[in-house]
Image 1 (cartoon, rainbow, N blue to C red):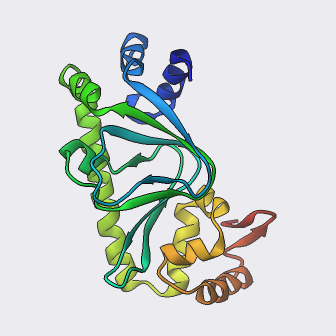
Image 2 (image 1 turned 120 degrees about the horizontal axis):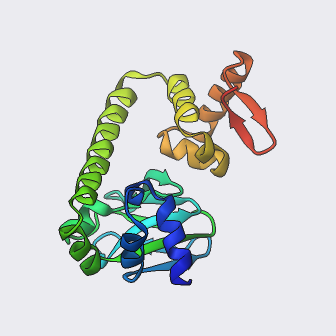
Image 3 (image 1 turned 90 degrees about the horizontal axis):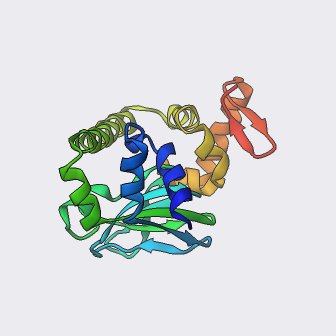
Length: 208
């Protein structure tokens, strides 16, 4: 992809929204875009990443395997999500694996180039710290919510907070995120439809 197009994509990512045209062009010189087909592996647990990865198109699932070898989905991510940024920046093995659920693309910034860029752009360092803190807060909220909420509350909460993702994912994928069976998800969707807290569309369900 041409440098000019990469610059335009960088502009759309909130992390880089405060950068000038010159700074964006500088960052684009150490950036490239990789395209993936559905079911392609983005990275595997234990790898060391040489690139800061930002999802710019498609849906990616992040998962681990339990002691019996079963795949456990940690979460699904869509456009402009940073992927495995903490381990990448620490240069430690990635704690999980990732796979594309759809066709998609990832913007990859050379880690060495990104680190050099950070040294002269302290505001960007602050933005990354804020991104990491937000993920920690979100994780804590999810832990507390999953411990206290009923299955119906979990389903409603998912559709409230993930309207686009809810339309992109299949029902069994949503069930996996919520740690429930597809049958349990279906029963609770039926309840929420009757209560008019969800409505059905041609591509799935959403909050009215």
